[in-house]
Amino acid sequence: MTQNAFLASTAFSNIAVGSATVSAVYFGSTKIWEASSGVTWTNPDLANASYDSVSLSISSEETFPTDLVVSSDGTKFYVLGAAGYTIDQYSLTTAWDLSTGSYANKTFSVQSQASSPNGLSFKSDGTKVYVADTGNDAIYQYALSTAWDISTAFYENKSFNLSSSSPNISNPYGIQFKPDGSKMYVIGHSTDAVYQYSLSTSWDVSTTSYDGVTFATKPQDGGPHALFFAPTGTKFYVLGIVNDKVFEYSLTTAWDLSSSSYSGNSFSISSQENNGKGLFFKDDGSKMYAVGWQNDTIYQYSTAAAAWTNPDLSSASYDSVSFSVSSQLSIPDGLEFNSDGTKMYGIGQVGDKVFEYDLSTAWDVSTASYNSVSFSTTSQMSAPVMLRFNPDGTKLYIMDQVSDDVFQYSLSTAFDVSTLSYASKSFSATTQTTNPLGMDLNDDGTKFYIAHSGGEIFQYSLSTAYDISTASYDSVSFNSGTQDSNVRGFRFNPDGTRLFTVGNTNDKVFQYSLSTGFDLSTASYDSVSFSITQDGSPADVAFKSDGSKMYLIGFDNDTVYQFST
Image (tube, rainbow, N blue to C red; front, side):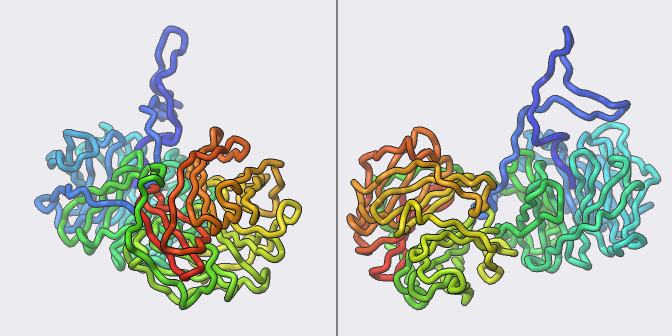
């Protein structure tokens, strides 16, 4: 599959050149830039995705659909099939709305080349189409004399054989190109891995060569079928038939598969389809489409990231939902969740371990259970009191109350504590505090904060994002001791304009505003608080990704409590 727009991550409008308005730029006959509508890709929120109850049956045209693609403007759908050996075209009267879809009575047969077509991708401007064939283990290239009109397609006598090159790949399924056509990515179904290739001539598969880069997806699904890359090149998604889930992967370097890791996010389509084959996303990431063999139907989902709404502490209420961690933790001090709310983590001064829990229903702590995964911190510290992940779950920070140090750890699999290892990086806060209790960091990893037992919070900058060893004190602090002289846990909202603290002097969550995000020198108390009656020694606070739920852990009862905000 391919991106929805050339240079999709860059927004341009029409450009005036002299008295003319330029809407596209060509190099020879190749379009290298065109004016866009300014669409911005936002990474899908798979944890909170939902079925739109919108679908389109394609059974009259194809009984074994293997992949799908949507045109750049969202008004045309294309389905590849292994029964008819064809690419069928559908029209949508309202862009991206599958409920307005219908068969366009346009088709193109690939049977002369492909004996088992399974992967489909288009060039960004709709003038070329590519088919991955598991019968011959090859990629075939076709041209369209009229862009996005599949009935005008013809074979260009260009292909790339995956089984005769190194590495030897059989059963290629998902296929996608970088927006400029210089890179190609292929899923090998037999090897359960994604492979990266370079094209010396963009969009010409006959010039393909292997980059020597592979990424295994088998830990998540042993039957990967569909592949989709975000236009930014920093995320890709795989649909597998073993678990019937869409899995999300992150790339620290855009389009470089060697920098990939599983993000820990996934979404199940099993309620609609138990044999998923094709996957595609809307150009802004807010919609997802899947097709499979079970029902010969395309399904539409909403995947827009949930917007954060600042909690209203004045009307917060206890959900009468809790979970005891007493079997693992005594005197728990730190509480964390993964990005989609399907995992929870705790740490305490007794036991010196990080414990991991599974939530069968995301963000509902009543469904939590200990998954027998833990990690000992005794090699670095003797009194761990707080823990925080970076956003993608590949780094974990733990603070020691005795040494006044923050230690950094790496996770080879995102949010999986069993893959933790010490990164040999630390930072000492001794100059500012000899009794640290709480900490937090901003989302881009350039700021770090530590709370002192007297209620003062200190601000630090990291010269290298997320590298705690590069931290330095900003000579900026904020004293919240007037509200609680023993602040233990605190959190910022995503843009750093709100701060929430909790302590065990007054057993309340207090709210502050920052006129400049993440700048403690601009913080002020909002005269807003929430009283905690469930535990007399609250130690940390956490929030759901959209701000609608609040979670507190305390060491009177060694329990996590859930609230609506």
